[in-house]
Amino acid sequence: MQSQDSFTQITFHYINGETESFDIPVTPEAFGEQLANFLSQPWLILHLFDQTVIILTSQVVKVEVTPQLTQLEGDGVFFDCQRVTALSRAAKL
Picture 1 (cartoon, rainbow, N blue to C red):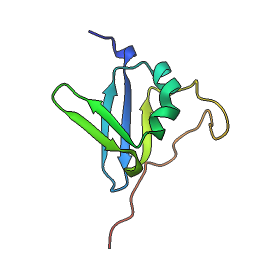
Picture 2: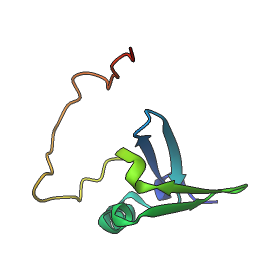
Picture 3: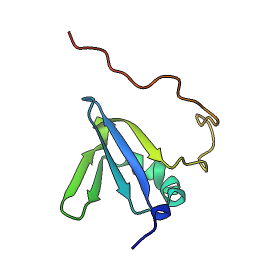
């Protein structure tokens, strides 16, 4: 059995407002190295123990990764940030 340190949790936020999370059996460091390639794929295929989930990346508006990927650096990467408010959605009329 793999330790919890060898997993990365990712949460997908979709255009329609739905979210879902997965534990991926890859260390956060290895996931960070693959992130650019991961996000450039048109489809992501996740094999679960009982099914396969296929995600159309064009429908994803945000990806949250736990634990944080501190090895990512460069333009558009900010450190020591704080979330001030929780994400909220406007009410549909």
